[in-house]
Image (cartoon, rainbow, N blue to C red):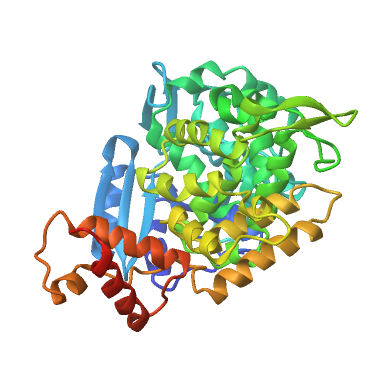
Length: 466
């Protein structure tokens, strides 16, 4: 089932003489799913730490990252492998770190697997007998796409609920009823989790989700949305059925994030773009709970959410801080939330050339190309509506942005300080307003190349008070 790298085979042969090597965890799960396993983790029973370390040292660089946890990293031919001893864990205090961990080489395969979070992660592979070791039914659960906790010890570590969130999103899983109830009972302890661990799980969802709505439903079903009130507020916030037949804002958001990760652009995006796009789509309607009202117009009552795009900025910032998102992401996410309705705000005729150039500037460091992906996800998140009418507006905006060469970035200012120096002006505070005025004129379409910008600048300096 698992094809071993050539460089790992002799290491396992040497370990076999002193202990019982097993491939464990995610690599076994991934192999059963038919995907190439990522990191290979090897658990070695039947030996002690010092013996294992002595066996590994001749094969490469070793790093003892946790003697108390029984863990050794081996770097061999450019690849890092994690080796560990089976271990017992017992709860000694509050929080994610309140555990006593003791390596125990004598644990059986079933006992060693029992400490793992979910059954799909509790399988092992014997590399010599080519045998799946599955004492807790992980293969069966994986086949029916069920996420089930391995043992009652699951409830001792609240981080495992967020791990369940991202696993559900990555592998299209649903929670087993008994696991859902166990998670509901440890909501309060989720407040003890450190931000870096919270972000670690959200980041996996951002980068690897195939059905992100599954992760959001894990939060809802377990009651963990109360720890993320910006998401919790979406539940039961109504929408006008004519435009949103799919239901409330939470349902809409679930459809939107799924639509995003189904796009070709998503699959070809680098990691930070994936993070920015999915978080922007997740947050694009955070302003609706704050603005949704029912109004009467021409004898008809309708739900509407005026200014929800701009009102969504504050809860988006709060949410990003709450999940521990890196600060570098917010400048790209916030403008995508604020301007996700720009194609509609432009009316039937669309935005003017000047408005498109200005939009590109306002979006930076994000781009109109990024915004188009958010808009398309929003349009597709309204089943059974197919989004074709809105797609015309979005495609029109994208095509015109490409024609103006502003789809990826705002126009580069054509008038800069060196142009003023060439005209005999001394560098100083007076440069800034001149350059700003020139850029505004450029955005309005007064000039578009060096020659026309030079003519404009000469005329401006002729009439401007300096």
